[in-house]
Image (tube, rainbow, N blue to C red; front, side):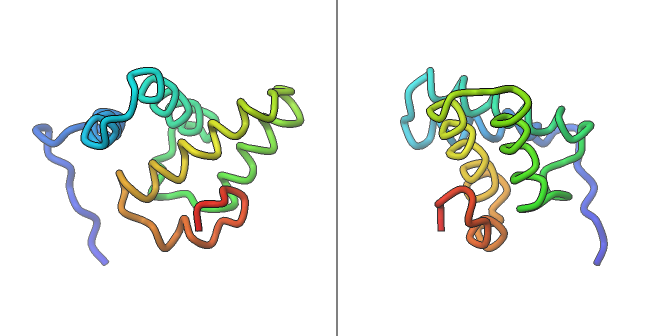
Amino acid sequence: MEAKAVSQDSPRLLDRMRAEIRLRHYSIRTEEAYVDWARRFILYHNKRHPKEMGAEEVRDFLSHLATERNVSASTQNQAKSALPFLYREVLHMARACACWKVCGCA
């Protein structure tokens, strides 16, 4: 399978995420939070593209938040909502998201 070349004119991933959020009329605070969680997820995995990652990396990131960052349950739930949105609505990888068990999006 040949990889598609991304043209310089195509929107970047986080800009695409913002556009999808705005299309659904989510609040600006939700937009900021979801984009920030997607950015943190990407940075945590050394700037790997989310299309190269799956359930294992999501579980690893969420475990990191709970055990090493000691985030509250509501904060972790926010990340658990943002990442499935990224995979389902932005990357159109609903099938990958449906098998996660950790996000409850199935």
